[in-house]
Length: 202
Image (cartoon, one colour):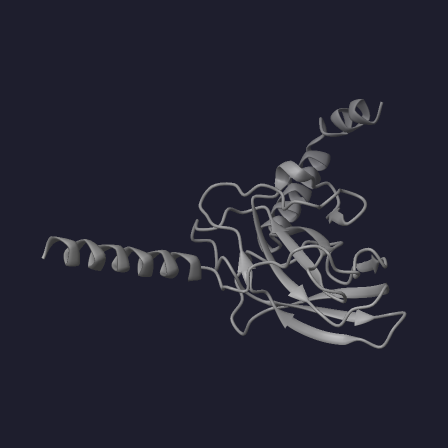
């Protein structure tokens, strides 16, 4: 019934212009806010949590850095106010799978109107010194930020409720190697391999 009413109102020129303006506004918001998901998983040690931020743009597509910004958590139920730079991002340019352990509605939350099919890249950080309780997440941009990781409405200032299981350890921490570090490491292994082959041939 709502769809029929919407179509009916769009027949008049004034309503058509209004609808077009609204679509432009929505498009502008989407263009300036690319991060549309936030989640968390247990870290390896007690007090550690992996915080994940998902974006609807692919990494490696030239729309911004694949890794940038910091996560600030402010404790509502315990004294805590720590800002930690993101240290890991999924490789590009293809779509990245959802990190293991994230469950929508439990420890994974999307901005309104978004879902799993709208997330194509992730960045993450392991945060320590946490206890069970409620924390407010704030994204802290770098000095000259791109729009890639700018949180969509509904994510900035979101309250995360961490349980004893979330902060009890037993998980695994995200990589502490900044984006691109793995490529440098592989390049190093490549040079070692070439050196070994040259020694064998000589």
